[in-house]
Structures are given as C-alpha cells and as structure tokens.
Image (cartoon, rainbow, N blue to C red; front, side, top):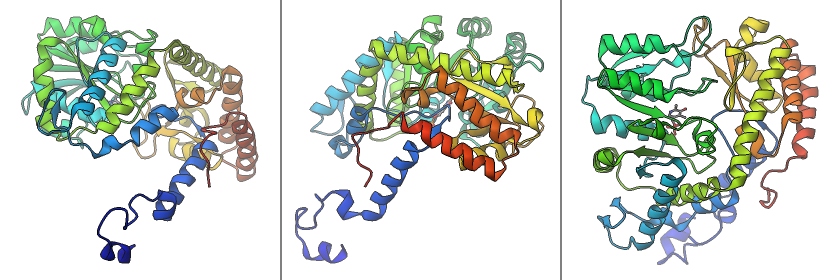
Length: 434
Ligand SMILES: *Cc1c(COP(=O)(O)O)cnc(C)c1O
C-alpha cells in the first residue's frame, strides 16, 4: 500500500476506489466477524437494535464527505444543496412522528443531545434534579464522572424502596427544597411508564424547565404505546435514534418554537462542528420506516415480548423488579434469586451466545462493576421476528444457565439450542459473510 501511495498521482492509481475486502482485509475480516456474531447471538441488550438495509446504505453513503456546518439554507460551506434537502426531510419526518414544533437532528449521540440542552439554558453550577443511576438513570444525567456531574450541581431523586417506582412525592419535595433550574426525566433501566404530566406540573410549580430524555422508549412513543412528552407540554425532549426507534446511531432534540434558536445554536456552534450528514440521511430513512403501520405493529410486538419475558421469570420465581414491565425492558435481580452476581450471569450467558448486560438494581448492595441485576430487552430479537413463543424458550435458556451456576456442560447445551433457534430467524440474508 505504501508503495502504491508514493508512486501514484491520483486516487485511481492508489486504488482508493477498491473495495474494502481487497484494500483492507484486516478491518474487513472483523466486519465479517461482527456480522457473524450478530447472526449467532441472541441480542437482549435493551439499548440495541438491528437496522434495515436501507438505513445501513444511507449510513455508508457519500454524504460522509460533506462539510455542512450550520443549518439548511444557512451553511458556512458551498455545495450543500443536497445535504440541505436530506436534513430538511429528516426534520420534517421527525416533527410529524413526535408531534414536535422544532427538531434538531444534528446531535452525534444521545449524550450530545443532552449536553446541548444543558448548554442552551443552564450555567455552570446551576442545579439539576435527575434520576440516580441505581434507579435507572443515565450517565449524562449528572453522574459524577460525566461532564454533567462535573459542571452542574446535581440533586438526585430515586425510586421507592418497596415498589421501586418513581416516587413523585419525593420529586416534588426535592424540587421545592432545591429549586432546580431543570428537572431531568428519563432512564436506561426503568421498566415502567413515565408520567410526564406529573413532572411538568411539579416543574411548573417551582419555575423549572423539564428535559425528558426518551432515548430508550422513542419507538414506543411514536407508536403511542408510551406517553409523548411533547404532548405534556415539556420544553426539551431528547432521544437517541438507535434504540427502540431502530435507526442509525445518533441523537436528536425536540423542542418548542420559542427555544428553537437557543437549541440550534447550542448544538452548532455550541458543542459540535460539522454535522454527520450520512448519519442524518440514515436517521431520515429510519424516520420514514417509523411512519409506517408495520412499525406500530413492531412496537406492539416489542411490548408483548418484553411482557412475556417478565411473566416467565416471575413464574420461575425470580425477583423481577417492579414485578414485570410496561415497556421493552425487564430488570432481574439474579443475586437475590440465585446468589449469582450480574457480572457472572452476563459472562455465563455470553458463553452461550446470549448477550445481556449486568445492571444495578435499585438499592443494590453490590458495586456497579459487579451488580445484583441483569437487564433484558426485546427490541432486537423482535426485529429478527421472534414472538412470545420464542420468549418462553429464551427465559428457559437463561434460567437453565443461572440455576446451574454457569456449569460448562449446561452452557454448551444451551448454546446449541440458541444457535438452532437463531437459524430460524436469519439476519441480513442478502449480505454475504465471506
Ligand atoms: C442510551 C441513552 C443515552 C445516550 O446515548 P448515547 O448515544 O450512548 O450517548 C442518553 N440517555 C438515556 C436515558 C439513554 O438510555
């Protein structure tokens, strides 16, 4: 390759137009390995999903070449006429899906969407009131190791020690006592529906903003299977586009017209430079898919599958946090159930090609590296076409391994069953893995 480069004068000669398979077999090899891993694993990580071929194509498109700092029809660079169209379409589709007044599709990730909202209306050391991590909160909601915890004064609300549900009275008390500038609502591991209206009322009584982060449940919100924070009058709504929404990896902000300018300038030039137009194109494609009736059916099946998983574990005698789920995720306390830590459980399951994550449970007695819990989610397996019948099998696989303390003989057998099951649900059959 180096020689090629020295001798050549133009792109054709250095063979920049070769396919990756020939030009960079090392990376290509890992991409193929990853494709095989996806095919041969039961993906139960609640924040993951599998995008369509159309979304993949948009994400891998020539728009990665384009600099387009600014916004449609107000860019710093020339040559943006098609970039403008793509971003305008993404915005238009997102507004419609979420019934939002104003949308910014440029945040590179969910964390960056949150950062932009904070940066738009908070000053350093302002107080925010947010859900703590052990109760299901996210790093970017004021974790001490995150910028949000370093820059702002963070007060935490949690869940009730008995019901493990959000204690709205506690939120109200803390809001009255600390007068936060912003109340942050949203979670990564809370299996129940959020009452945005209650949060909005509490915030209004203390003259505080609300940021509703619907990163996990955005798809459910579109399908009207979870309340929509825009319709509860909440000022700032952020989301990722790659979880239940099943789009390209990225973030997005929805807001009211009165905050449009503030939010847009917080994203650019506030915290980002050029937008990732290829990612925005892929978001637009995913938004088109999310506007279809099939997407509503898909979200319904996500709920049915998660609910079936929860039911099965209750039947098997597990400590299922909150007794089940209203959304796409189930939180199991495996430590109380079997004396198995979340870390061991997730490692054993991975050996059997079942991918989950260890997770803190409310009032956990173990550290975040060990944890008492595992989190299971149904979005990715539902995308593959699985239904309740398969959820019963999956709960059985997991239980078999945990109740036998990760015995290697058992793991081997379960892995065989997992592979057999996955064969019936092909993933990207049109992509070759060689
Ligand atoms: C996943 C998640 C995010 C962050 O998304 P990234 O794209 O990983 O930065 C933000 N908030 C919540 C509640 C999440 O679950």
